[in-house]
Image (tube, rainbow, N blue to C red):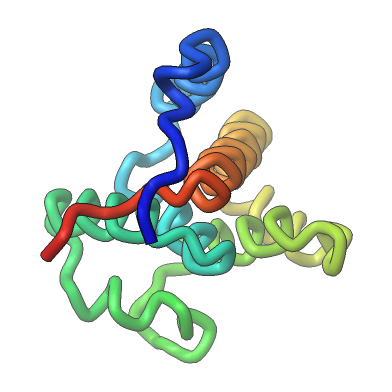
Length: 147
């Protein structure tokens, strides 16, 4: 596959708006490594090759062990995820698949208990942000660098 078009060049205003959301999320106080873990998981669910590549790379650069990244698709069965990571991942999946899950109360309550009001909102914006980037990268066929 090859990239269909360069959405950033064609609509710099739209890109700046998206970058504004990314900037807000980055300045929200939400843990940056956990943010990349969430972004990777959402990108896996959505099947975004470019974002999977990008956030895997960011996690490795942050010092996250490859084994932690490798088992992310099966995080529920893996014992190496903290309670906070589990709450963030469960909420990210619930919000990403909102038409199926309707963001269940138990998942919401666990995430709220782990993050509190302010970071819960930041986490939700983070999930919205990566879903939006996925929805640009996938249809326009953004490609990770060749091996």
